[in-house]
Image (cartoon, rainbow, N blue to C red; front, side, top):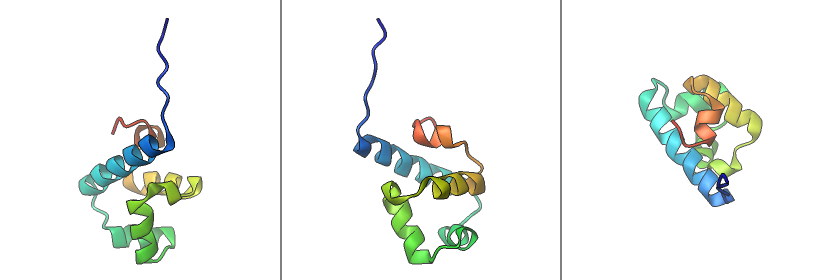
Length: 79
């Protein structure tokens, strides 16, 4: 019988946060560039990156697009 792993919200948010840090470090974008491209203020962008639980789905999709990563990789801790 296959085991099912259940994630709580904290695990998902931490996974996304860690994956965003890696993706940002590998990209040519700065946090300020991302804020401008997403139409957010720099302080708001910093808040969203430090607590990805505040990201809207549309914002997460845009972030993935700008960072050239797949949203599934971002959410599944495979990045």
